[in-house]
Image (tube, rainbow, N blue to C red):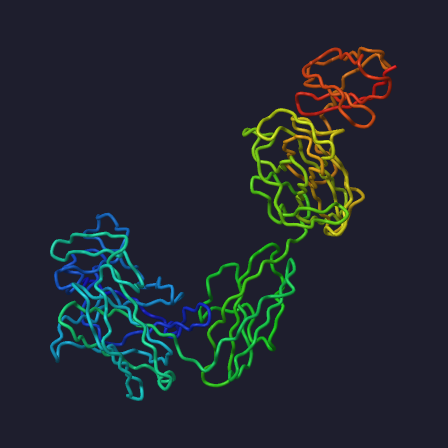
Length: 599
């Protein structure tokens, strides 16, 4: 027992506070008298000074986390919580807690004998509470203790529980807390252990006739010779005639609202209800301030919620009569829908697929919408190069693979926006270029009605398949000013398998104001002159120092020739007469296309 006085004043309201999970009404019982030993070493000083005796009869005591032998000793990382609150880990009673007594005074009802006259002790509670169940926090040192427990009610009637076995503080089941360590009082030797010692909780169910009677005291009588019995705290599942409401699954969930409804058990006289909701799954305490109080009826619409957010909600009943409030109900959870984003916006796919994006859509066509839930779009380094960082991609091979990749909705009602992104194609496992299959297709689409119908903005196929470099796509959205505009990438391997196996990549998806930034205004467009035009067999190129690659496509979009490097001439003698599109790819990622006619 430490010399300095320890002041832990318990607020009056705490006497009635509940640690509530689901419909159980757990309350701590506060002790007016009955503890006879200080078995918890705490604060600064020798264990012989900060305790009066041991737990087990052979000089070992418990230790608090704030214990230090001297003021300069290193803090310990185990022990009983400094605030004395034990949150039980027993799976049968989630939310149950116990309040230990002051560590500076007697904190255990310790019984070391089974001799009549010295083998019992009585804990008297400062505020009697009626209960469905009584929970005792205790342990036994140096072996198992067998005890009889007598519960006395305020009308002086009793209920007796005989032959209760309390496990040894090492290795027993039904523990509320474990791994709290101990100290040898004679030498101040500290022992840490991740699983021992332990404190156990024992449940005592009150008979139906006793459930409405406040519990005044508990007498513990030791009946066997082995073990040293230590009782530390009591809690209850408090009795109430005001039963918890039954909360239903939320309905009508939108981006910013949800409707909740509940029923009241038969016999409960409900005057009104309180509602509490939170983004945390932690249940509300009895004295928490509700979000909505004195709600009439059996339903309510929660408004002003954040979009794309998971909420948890509880309801309790305010009853007529002396027992005015029920415990909080079982919780229900819901997630609000995705709200429309006002640009500017960028998804670089570092987190995939991105908040409110959908990759688990498959099948169908742009006319029918998705028909399945398979996932074909996934995260991969852009162009299969780690230095590029993550991107979205679809592996296109075989046949019959159709995957959708849908964006978050956008509010484009202000007008003046554009969409842009980078894209490219490589072989499945490498960085080389790959052609697309004969009936493979990737569409970039837009819907101005939230995804009900789609407009194709761009198509890539065997005729205009992307290169294995970073290609830029930009589209002015002047004609799209809806409040729920959605974009989607649609990839299909068609019905024919041409032995292709490649990745189509998308990165840095951006919706922004269409006005060019300063850097874009000042950027010079690179051009390369091609001549003669029309040409006969050889097409010459001038000013090619920044040129990386040249492709030649026919009028149908099919690539008929590709030349790598800063070439100055291209031999096209094998081509037929007609119109061709010569695309010039520059080292900075930009590109330019010119028309050329072969005689």
